[in-house]
Length: 336
Image (cartoon, rainbow, N blue to C red):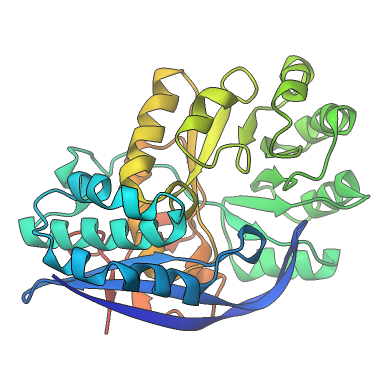
């Protein structure tokens, strides 16, 4: 195999604000694996509050370029295990490499990954469209720009309930709310009571990521399902979330790729927990990888590529929330 790296700047369609901060653009780190006949693409979005940069990921994988290029890719899961000792502290870089390996593998065997895993695209969940924290006028404008049946509302302000009440006046769509760790026990329970009256489907990550024990009390009294995001980063976290959340949000970049994500999904299902897959602000490369997992999921948040205005790739895309799959193998992603 040959490996190439691409660092691109993605421009946001609108300033994107969550409880962690705001941004107008973000870098994308893309890995390309070539075998002489096929090209496999993988991606990870650098997240500043995790201390991850595109340059750091490139430099880390460059250290092991000879090892990667010497590998005879027969099974992406084996390749993930082979690289884990080198990348065990670099999940984002490992994700980009693992995703590219799965894409290349699917193209080599001539199948989309969901078919390789024996999955069907019948009755798959729709994605939400994410509305970042903003003025009510701008949040309503974003909803009108993208007519989706489900919106995820980013919260973490001093007037969260009021925001949802005002947005509810403008649409009958289903809402999901994501506090990004901003609330406490009483606030979460109180908000759940209000949101249950406003056609909110669930609450994502209401409290700080390590607040597992306080979540037991929240679980007792919450009127809505609770989904872990920041509290469920890697495989070991699934068990930690059992009994504290109704479900988990698996993110490929955070857990180190498709390979561990499959294990996390299977473990959560074995514990009768709901499973969601979420995205970063990313290109169609990352979104297409999530798309292959959609038949395994209860919920999906894969709107990252429509949050940007200069997507350099193509692949799985959303039509009013419905995932549409191209007639390509692997993840379905392509970049010129």
